[in-house]
Structures are given as C-alpha cells and as structure tokens.
Amino acid sequence: MDAIPYVNLAKQHAAIKAEVLAAVGEVLDRGRFILGDEVAAFERRFADLCGTRCAVAVNSGTDALILALRALGIGPGHEVITAPNSFVATASAIALAGARPVFADVGDDYNLDPERIEEAITSRTRVVLPVHLTGRPADMTAILQVAARRGLDVVEDCAQAVLAEHRGRRVGSFGRVGCFSLHPLKTLSACGDGGVLTTDDEALAGRLRVLRNLGLPARDDCVEWSGNSRLDSLQAAILLVKLQHLERWTERRRENAAAYRRELGGVDGVRVPGERPHERAVYHTFVIRARRRDDLKRRLAEEGIETAVHYPVPIHLQTAARGLGYGPGSFPAAERQAREILSLPVYPELEPAELERAARSIRRFYGG
Ligand SMILES: *Cc1c(COP(=O)(O)O)cnc(C)c1O
Image (cartoon, rainbow, N blue to C red; front, top):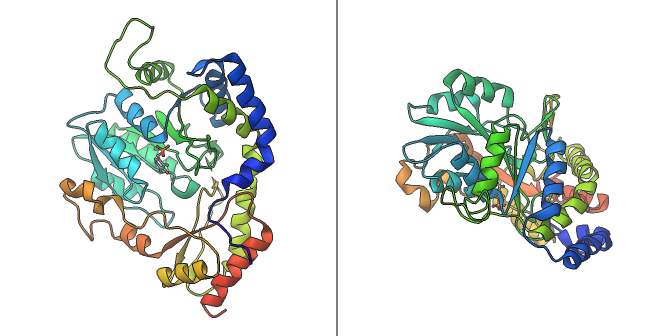
C-alpha cells in the first residue's frame, strides 16, 4: 500500500502549476523582483481577507513578530506574555526584540488560558501575544478584556490560522497587529519563506513598512536602524494565485477534521479536538491526544502513515530558555499535552480513502 505522507505539497502544486508558472513568467518578464506591484496587490487582498485596513508583507512569520513588537516600542525591560506550547519562533521574536518572554499555561484548546494570563502580568508587562495554535482561534473576547483592563497591547500570532474566526471575526483583526507566516508548511504558503502583518492602524502599518526595509521611508533617508525583511515579488505573485484557492482548501481541511471526528470520536484512548459553535478552526494541524502516543506513532509509521508532534518540547524547557527561570512542572497543562499530542495528516489533497485508512489503523491500535 502507498505511504501516506504527513504533508504533500507536490500534490497541491500539481493542481495549480500552470497558473503558478504563468504568474512567475509575468514577474520575470517585468524584471522587478523586490516589493513592487505584486506585493502591494497581495497586501490589499490579504487585508480584505482578514477584515483589516492594512497588511504589510514581509519575509517570514518570525520577522513579522519581531517587527510588530518593535513597531509597538517593545524592547529591553519589557515583558511579553505568550504560550509555552507554540513554535519556538514566538518566544525568540520576543527575545530578539529585546524583551523577556513570559509564559502562561494553556487550556484544552491548546491556546492561552485567560485566567493564567492575568496571573502572569507584572509592572513590566506590555503585550499579550496569543497564538492561534493548530489553526483554532484563541478566546479573543476574554483576552481582549484582560488586556484592556490592564492597559496592555495585544499582538496575535496567526501563523497557523489564516481565515480562522472567533465570533464571526477573522484572526489578525482583534489585536493591534496580527502576524502570519507564509512558510511552505502553513495553510497559505509561498514557495519559500514569507510572512505578512495585518492592522487597522495606518500609522503603525507605515512604521512596519519602514522597518521591513532597512529603516528607509525613501531611498536616501534612513530614519532608524533596521534589517531587510522584504517579501519577494515572485513570492507575492505565487501567493496571489494561491489566495484564489485558499477558501476551498480550508473547507477541505475542515471536512477532513469532521471525518476524523466521526471515525475516531468513540475510540477509547483518543481525544479528538473540539470546536465551539462560535469558532471556525482551519486545522493547520489536526491534533489528537493519544494514550501511549509514542507507541501509536511508531505503529502508524510501520503501516506507512506519517504523523508529527507539534511540539515535543515546550518552549520553556528549551536550552535557549534556561535563563528565564522555568523548569519541569512550570506549566503542567502544556507539559502533559506535549507527551500526548499527535498531528495526523489533514491537508486538502488527502484522499478520503487515505484518511479512513489512517483512522482504521488508529482504531486497531486501541483494539477497536
Ligand atoms: C511557523 C510559525 C512561526 C514562524 O513563522 P516562519 O515563517 O517560519 O518564520 C511563528 N509562530 C508560529 C505559531 C508558527 O507556527
């Protein structure tokens, strides 16, 4: 039997190759490769999609986060509260902006628990940085309430959650800034690295445009030191093609999630992710909680079904986090989840028969 890979980007591109190559050809013919019309067009479309006034495209999700924090004046002496179960980039962006990453434990939805945020606030806290992990929206109503009460800014890490909604509103439109990754493994992906920020604040968007381009508002006037975080015209042209398919791809992910729920809902030993009525999750990952996770993962691999763990080591237990004063036991929910979580293939091109085969293998493992 054919193997079922965890991701299959070749399959996505096979279906849209002619469109992508035509878009690439146009950029080659024009001969302008940095920022330019394609990037501006992508920014307009992306802002519309998220329901924000502005979008600013950059070279990665990590730089999006760093620039968002810098544009809000975050730096040495400040603390930023985020989730310990995110990809390490969330915390490294805070540290690279010069601030201190402070973690708060997460709930069963893998997202920041608003009560734990409140407990982590000190006089140095400036920003709450929720992560919409797995593509499921964090509880933005509660998080915005805590932030407003304590006078904090909110920056959203939307890297896994383009098109996700909380109470009918898209992520990236709740905080001062939303930060997205367009990495190949994300649900909207460039053919290489990319990222984008969303905001309703035109002045902030202007500052972000300067910061992504070496601090240069105009060619010969550098107003502050900054790096090069620009998105390529070629990537923007490819992204404009992919944007036309994103809603359909997202629906396919949601259908796959619903199918897994039907197939695995009653299995003793497995917990499938829920979805509350006011949420629209986009399933960047479909993460189950599995008893004897490592044995299950090994068995599935033997049967040709590739899975992944996002992420096996929480950020507060990473070597780079040693100086922050955390240790095993600091965030019990995140640490327990790290031992039990398993990401199943959920990409739009996954065939129903492949999904059923993966589910059948899981049921068999638990004796069902
Ligand atoms: C992927 C990811 C990032 C970093 O994005 P890059 O484009 O890889 O730099 C940040 N946060 C989260 C939650 C991510 O999943």
